Image (cartoon, rainbow, N blue to C red; front, side, top):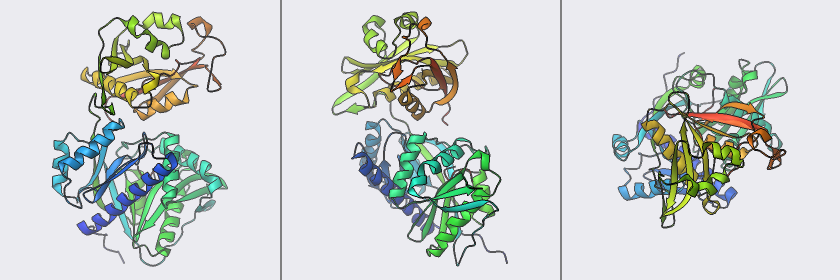
Length: 472
């Protein structure tokens, strides 16, 4: 007998959004314990919560907004200032069952629609059968298996099936690792899937107030089409039903394979969240009362040479390009605390961040991020399509910084750093010899880092802004 579809009214949506807000609160509090405070905040607001865990974290957002009234302007000012002080945009995820005045309020304050995500639900009653295809085994993940679990899940997230609306989120492995450990401290249980004894994927589950949240699942590409996701889903549903949860919920990208898979298992679409983002206003970063402004520089480049030399070890190379392009400077009063050199390339619509550095005493305060954001604004205003940056393959910190600013790996140039280009042979960074450059598409070199070594990574960022459950 066919069952009727699960209907979601405002009361059910309020319950699910409250549980989501509680999860973000618990995860951010776990991040605070892990990091010893260090900029983490949790700010309740109008039935929801605003949280910030660390740079690039999936917990940096406003969740559950709109089911406890409309936040007043002063509260929103405080929340937006807290994100801005950390150099982070404000991301609000708002259910279409929340009050319509919420959307009007946020868009009126400069928030822009970035994406949508669907929330699906399944009524749980009685026992749920575990489905275990041949060769597949699913069980809770042991502590000593976390790293291999993360490798499989990160590999799955990095290679989506490509169906449906692309995700607006992408997290580096180290950020994902921190988030998943904070999830575990918040009561989330990780499940590991093995295919013929090999770790093939993973998922997670949190149960509270009768709601089973399926908080993530992914399968490594080499093990897809074997029933791994079916087994992960059925194992979590069986455990949720046994724990007397009455509903299971999952968040997916619209039209994705994840959504298709869970609907095949009986999930119904409950509601959609609009993802609204307010970017960090240009020049808004401040530490204490000393505001830092970013503006174009029109003076002699020689005055900036000490900053240029922080990011370029080779005098020969620096002399060849120091006068090229335009330079942005970060100013605290009249004091230059950082710079970024932006140059055109031979390819139409493509620009490159050639050199960037931030003075040592103000690093890790958001200055580098502000410089990059301003460079992106300039390129966008000139109808640019891509922004490139090259950084040393050995410099993991640089690679992480650029990816957090939206850059993606494009190519690697081997043996780019040689005595021919003015580099000292055998130069090491964090114990790794400079061998080449990584080119990132739409990124920049972080403050005060050495220039690329012999291997060069190429990365880029496309100007348009780019399944939370993870490609089921």
